[in-house]
Image (cartoon, rainbow, N blue to C red; front, side):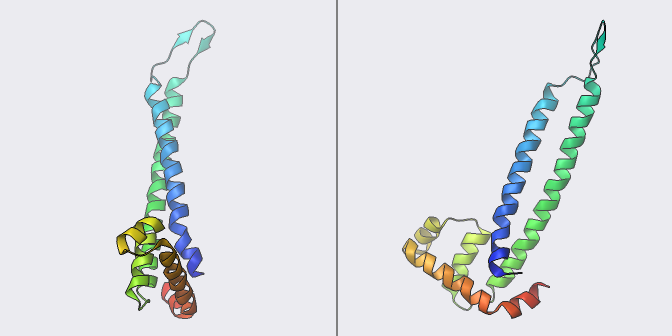
Length: 143
């Protein structure tokens, strides 16, 4: 796996988790409004117990998927942390750690480290290039 691909994965997974949590919240809202009673009117019967049951099943399934994604995200972050440890320059390590493990923006990193944003971009790119040069070592470590 390419270093840049690995480092991009947390953001994509976090977005998927966020979407699943939003979906779960929407379903939960619908479920809270659904009454478990059966209402029968002449000629028609509401099957809200089945609807409520289906909503609860969907929520439970989403909870399971969210947990799986969160565990996968934790594993990927461990791999990223392990990759970062191969850098000798502590500034580069710090930038990658702040960016990919603490989800900080480049502006926040520049402020934190008292560098210009342009310099942070340069060091970030150098760090990724350095890790790509060490790819055989890092790739073997990940497998």
